[in-house]
Structures are given as C-alpha cells and as structure tokens.
Amino acid sequence: MSIRITVLTDPDHGASSRRLVWLAVDGEGNPVGTASLRLFGDPGQAHLAELAVRVHPVERRKGVGSRLVEAVLAGAGAEGRRAVVAPAEGGTPGEAFLEARGFRRALTLRHARLDLTAEVASEAEAGAGYRLVAWDGAVPEELAESYAAARRAMDDMPMGEVDYGTTSWDVDRLRAVARAVEERGEHLHTVVAVAEADGSIAGFTEVVVPADGTGDGLHYGTAVLPAHRGHGLARLMKVESIRRTRGQYPGLTGLLTDTAEDNAPMRKVNEELGYRPTHETYQYQRLL
Image (tube, rainbow, N blue to C red; front, side, top):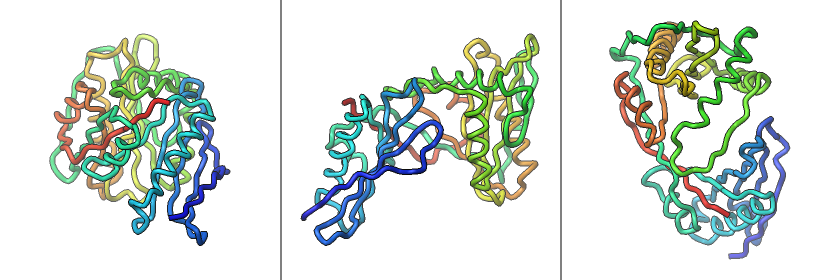
C-alpha cells in the first residue's frame, strides 16, 4: 500500500502547548490516518511531548499507524524532546500497538465514579486552623496569587515512571483555564482550604460540570501542599465539593475521577467517600 505522510501545523496554539499534525494519504490521495504531537511549552516540560494516532478502521494493520509513529518520533526528536507519552485504554489493541513500537507502560490510572443518586458521605473533619472557601468560575482576585502558588502541590504527586516534569502556574494561566471551560459551555467549581495562620491556600479541589448540568461531572484535580498534609484536608474539601455540586445540579448523576495507581492516599480518600472503580487507562512512554 502506497502511503504519503504530510506534516501540518495546527494554527490553534494554546498558551501552554502547540501541536504538529501528520496526515497519511493513500496512493489516490484519500486520507487514511492522522497523528498529532502535543509539544508542551512550559519550561519545566520542554522535554515532553504527547502522541495521539488515529487510523481509519478499514485501513488498520496495513502499516499506516507505524509510518505515522515513525514520522512523529522523528518530529519529536527534531523539536528537542526526549520523552513522548501516549495514552491507551486497558484491554484494547492500543497497548500492543504502542509496546511493539518501543513504548513502555509508565503509569496506571484508576478511574472511579461516585453515584450521586445514592447516599454519599456528608461529613468530614480536619485539623484546627483551616477554613473552606469556594467559588464558581475564575478565582477571585484576592485569592488569585495564593491559588497560583498552591498549584505546585501537583508537582510531587505520584505519577508512576512518567517524566512529566513541572508546570508553572500564574494568575493568567488560572484564568485561561477557567475561560476555556466557560467557552465550552461547562461550569468550573473550586473548593480550597485556607490556612488561618497566614491566609494562604493549603489545598484545592476542582469539579467541571457539563453545560446542561446532567450526566457525570469530572474532577479536574485535588491536591494539598506538602506542609499541610496529614490534616484530612483532601477529604474535607471533596466532601464540601460534593455537597455543593449536588445542591447546584440536582440533575447530575455522578462524579468521575482518575488517580495514579501509586497515589494510595488519594485512592483511599475516594474509596471512603464511595467512589467505585470503573476501568483503568495507561500512559505509555518512549524515551528518545
């Protein structure tokens, strides 16, 4: 089968990444597959890129995917990247496809769902010295700098063997995320724990709800800064987030979350709150 690969530039560059796209066409000029490479722009992730490959079902097992991956890896190397990651659903052909092309499983994500139509935990206790604050949409001005600083709590979260690096957060980036959610028509809700001693944010949890307020919402992230761990803040914030979400969206039936397999403390919190496992996904990584 004659295949021609063409590299394209995605004009829709984000504030923190850009994409290259490869198009595979057959001898008659018909598109048969695509691949994209997300190039992270943050200085702490300048070594990293993320691969996605799609081949038309009738064109699979004809070498199209392999040709696309070869082109993408060459492109990643030319861009100075030293690690490429790619997701795969558990129990799908994607796992064998990536492994055959030099990728190795580096992270297992366990997905879980909380059934909001059933009884859920409604109480939680935390150590003295903290109070909860919640907002909808973009972070309030008076908490913006502290919230940006608190995002570093995500940097040391267990993430298997994936070389994710670090992400720089500032107020502009926080607002860009909130704006992106709003432009999709969805709803972003945040609960934070504030340390009474100095008024700084000690931890946070975020939920995104579909535009119509029905179906399942999605946890964007939950983290506690190292100095404030061991006080039950993750559970406290999640309980409050669940309570508020149920109150605002009576048509919402569930909340989805994913947690790294080796993040035992957060998985324990989720299990205690009633989240039940649904499936696993994996991050595969190839070092260049």
